[in-house]
Amino acid sequence: MAICTLCDKQDRKSHGTKPHEYLREQEERRIFGGAKKNGFTQQDYQCLQCRAKFTHSTDKNDFGWTLWQG
Ligand SMILES: [Zn+2]
Image 1: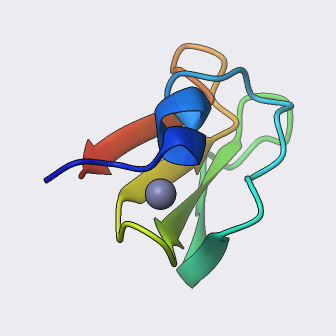
Image 2: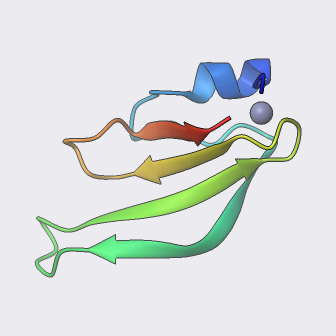
């Protein structure tokens, strides 16, 4: 399934990048790691236009934005 232009641009953006205008938060933010400096969070998003799903992670070993279902 094709994803929209905005989602195409969002994929693999850095951690600080804001979700585009049609991305909406899904479910709860997931928090990993106990110690604050090692901890990170993940938040799922879905696009209202093309239904693509993203995960935004604050883990610096990951891409900030990962498209996992288009
Ligand atoms: Zn989209």
